[in-house]
Image 1 (cartoon, one colour):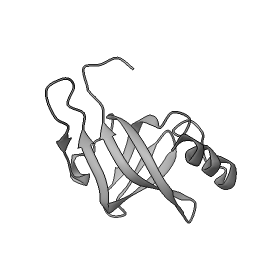
Image 2: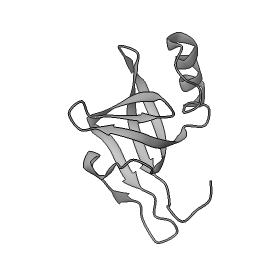
Image 3: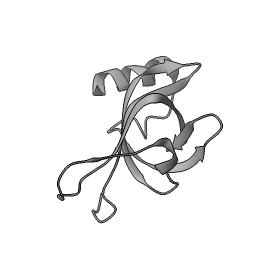
Image 4: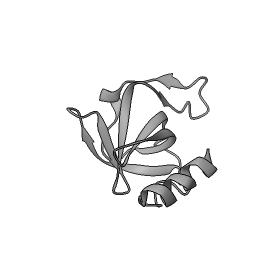
Length: 101
């Protein structure tokens, strides 16, 4: 997945900050367009994008919805492609709030 993301940087000229290791902090959430901005990069969230919250050592990851994504959360994103210079999220994992990154 990293090779794919790095390839998108070259092709699309997008910010490498969110793509270098696929982690970042949500800066804004647009409920109308179903997009989030992470490290100044707009990411489209589709109805079938898998969204989970990390278990943080307490069992299984918890399924989440778009409405659970909030400004300030640290997330890991896997991408499936891009459309109109906007990355499309395949999977989003909300990281543990109590862990230092």
